[in-house]
Image 1 (tube, one colour):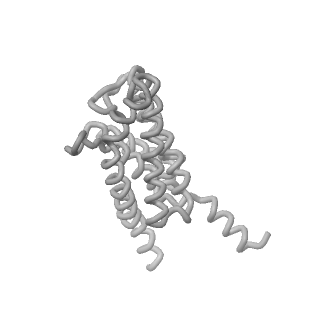
Image 2: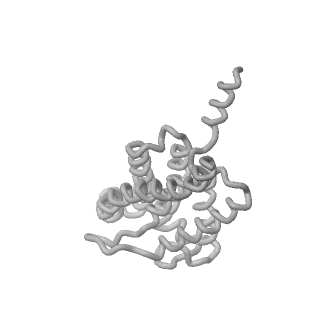
Image 3: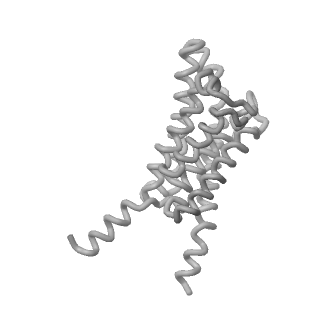
Length: 201
């Protein structure tokens, strides 16, 4: 295999997410900050009609876009474990295994699936464009709301699960899809600026 081909293959295997390739000690720091971000996003909401909009999916998508599927999935998994063992890091300060097995369990599982799936896609350079990232972010909301609906449907029926667990959140999902891409792009530019500056010197 030619050197050029080897370089191209290596480049295609490396994550395009700016925080995914950091040294281990820095990734550990990102893990802690990511869990803190997930916790903060769970405690905050934005007043909207017909229901307040939480910032959890926004945080999940930003983490996926900046950290990739591996580190991003690890951050969300660590946050889920932290809540399961009793830390009040879920929405409304909730915690415990009951939150994972109850009505919100589908959404919580959807966060992990979205972090891994969307992060894996955004690991690839061809999915880093504005249009592609909007599509990936929309997919993330489909996964979260889809799993949330599926769990609620088991408990209260499909129609009621849609009207109470999906439909009220569609507008917020659309807004957060756009906001996630804007935030990822802004953060990516800031994170890559020191490397670009070093390359120009």
